[in-house]
Image (cartoon, rainbow, N blue to C red; front, side, top):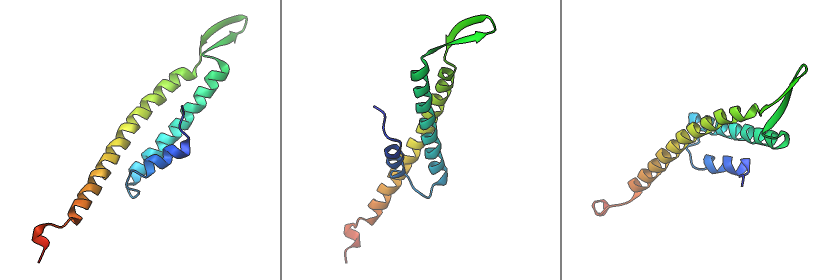
Length: 110
């Protein structure tokens, strides 16, 4: 089941520091690649995994050219996801530390 692009964007944007522009850029790249990947999937479903190529009087069947491109995009998605997940964890830890610093101890009492 494919997740809607807007939900995916919202999911990640809520979990990062909005002022971390490189992570915001990584998320946008990730979303763009997901859209491209899905577009390629749609084309392959419509055309089939194999296509017939005619070269003059010759005709032969080969795998759809987008399949190899999809492999490359998938590798890029995996790498970007690792970077995004790392940024999410760092931001979560920062928020936890911030909350802990707000807690009072017995030493704070008069």
